[in-house]
Amino acid sequence: MPARVRVDGMILGTAYSLHDLAVFLERAGLEGWDELDVVAAEGLIEWRGGGSDVWP
Image (tube, rainbow, N blue to C red):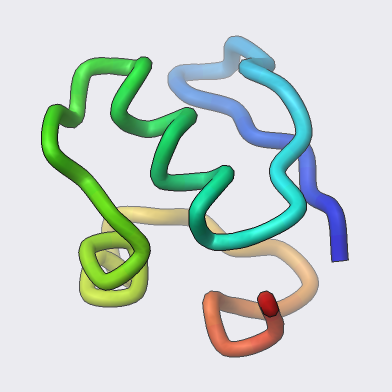
C-alpha cells in the first residue's frame, strides 16, 4: 500500500515499503535507520490507515 511520507509537514515522497520509509527518514536526518527501527518507532510515527504491519 503506497503512502505519502511527511516530516514536519513537508512531503518527502511516496513510500511503497518499510525500506522506502526508512530511506526517507534517514534522508530527513535519522541516520542509520532500517526497517526494524521503523517498526520499533511506532510511537514516533503517525500512521494513517494502518501501521507497519500492513506494509510488505
